[in-house]
Image (cartoon, rainbow, N blue to C red; front, side, top):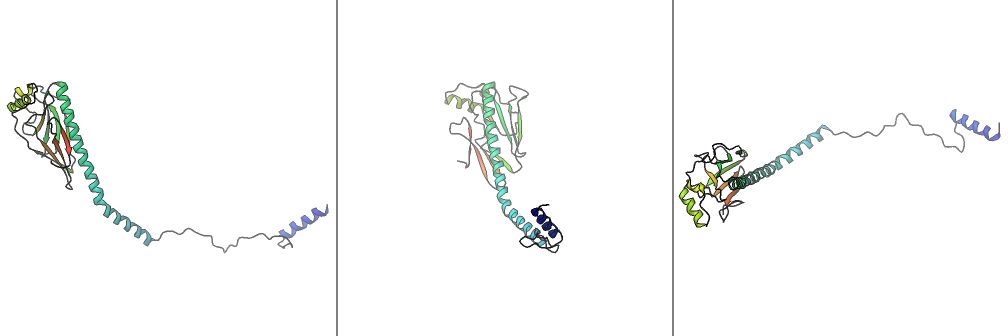
Length: 222
C-alpha cells in the first residue's frame, strides 16, 4: 500500500468514527429539533372578512349589471322588430301579396303573416315573444281605409295596388298591424310608431321614416 492510500484510509476511518480530522470540513448534521418553515393558512376570521367584501361588491354592482342586461334586451328587441319589418316588406314585394306585421301589446307578442285575403295559410309565418323585461306600445294606430291608401299611392305617382282595391281582411282583426303592400309602400292604416320600454325606464322608438317607406330605430319619439 502506498503512502497516499494509507493516509486516505486513515482519513475515512477517522471521519466514520466521529473524529474531526485537522484541515477537513465536518459534515453538517440536521438537528431533529429544527422546525421546518410551514405555509401560513387563512384563519376563519380572514375567510369571513373576504366573504363579506365579496358580498358588498356584488350588492354594489348588481344594479349596474341589471341595467346593462336590461339595455341589451331592449336593443335586441328593437333590432329584431326592425329586421322583421324589412323581411315583411321584402316578402310583400317578392311574393306580390300584402304582409301584416301584427302586434299584441297585451300578450307581449308580434309576428308576420300574409293577409288571408290572398292566402288562407302562410307556411312562412313567424311569431315572436317579447322579453319579459320589455313592453311594447302601439302609437297612432288607425283604422284600415282602402280609399285613403289608394289616394296616397296616386299622389306619390305609384300605380294603384290591388291591396288598396280589394277589401282588407287581416289575420288578427282585433290587433294593430303594419301593412306592407306589394308595391313596397306602407299602408296608411299602419301604426306610425312603436314604443319599446324596459323595466328600468329606458326606451326606444320604432318610427316611420320621413319617406314613409320604411321604419327606423330612434332613441326619442321625434
